[in-house]
Structures are given as C-alpha cells and as structure tokens.
Image 1 (cartoon, helix red, strand yellow):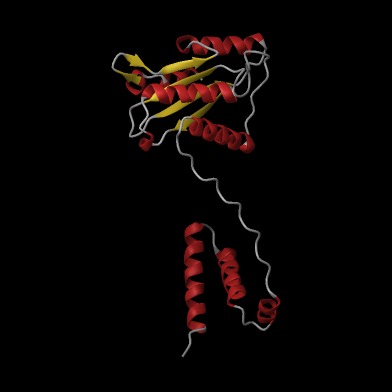
Image 2 (cartoon, helix red, strand yellow):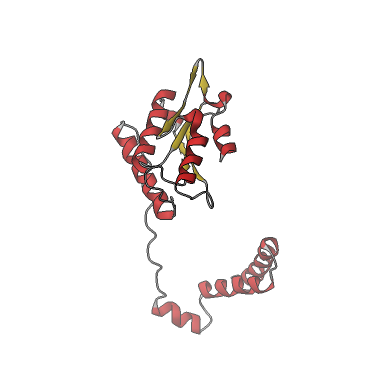
Length: 205
C-alpha cells in the first residue's frame, strides 16, 4: 500500500508548476499511509486486503483543468467511500488527465472492511456518470443487454435431422476441432482445415 501511495503521488506525475494535485478524503495525503494503518490497527484489521486502487479516466475532449479533474475525483470519493480514507492523485503526465484513487480497505469511522464486486463496480460507474452529467460532461451510452438466444426453428431442426443444416454442420466442425486441439493455435489450424474440407465437400458445381 505504501508503494502504491508513493507511486500515485510522484511529483513528475502530479505537479503543474508549483501546484501538486494530490488531495485526501478523510485523510491528509502526506500522512495517508500512517493514517490508514492507524485505522487498521485501531479496529484490529491489519490482515487481508489492504487497499483498493481505482483509476478515473477523463476524456481529452472534456478540456478540464487539473483542478477540475481533481475536484471530480474528490466528489466521487465522498459519494462512494464516505467513511473511508481516500487519496486522490491527478496525473498530468499522459495524453489525458486521470485520477488515481487509493482507498483504505478499513473504514476509519466504524472499522467495517470494504469489499468490492462486479455490482459495486457498475454502481461506481453510475455515480461517476451522475457526477459528469452534473458538471455538464458527456457520458458513454449504457451497454445494451444481450438479446435472448434464438431457438432453432422447426424447419432447421428437420434439416439437421436430414443432414442439410449448415449451422449444425459448422457446430460439428468446431466440436471436432476442439477434440483434437491442445491450445489456441492448434484449434485455429484444426478449424481452418476442417472448414476447408467442409467447403470443398459442399461446393456447388
């Protein structure tokens, strides 16, 4: 954790002139490691996962200042991790500004351990979108849910029974390739060979 905190706060990544864009939520950035460890020891939770590290990207076309990007990071930290110590470091050394958020795994308020799963990550994205919209920034369209797989039609099923369904033939070709393949490359070669055989066999004259 100490190494990550040092990495995200490096001067050449976070300084712009005399200004350094490293701030803290519920902690002082310069003392963050000590404060985070103090919270762990206080609640006797020094083992297990020590921290979470998030990256909050900001598109170049947003044309935001480092101050604005850092403020958005702090707002996100306050919304999503109100009772946890968070260091927000804005990196300026790449083609686009972005925030690194290092979150203590133990709450400094009640000692609860922070756990994250796929649903939490989606919730973070939703909150990030809300913050961006509030600041007049665009958000990505939500991914469309996959449509339910179509069932085989009766006609296709009958064609399969007669050996006249190209879809089932291709499934058979792929399954055969899987039986003989030991890795991705051999699977691709086996597929290519069997597909070539299939096309030659069914080529129209």
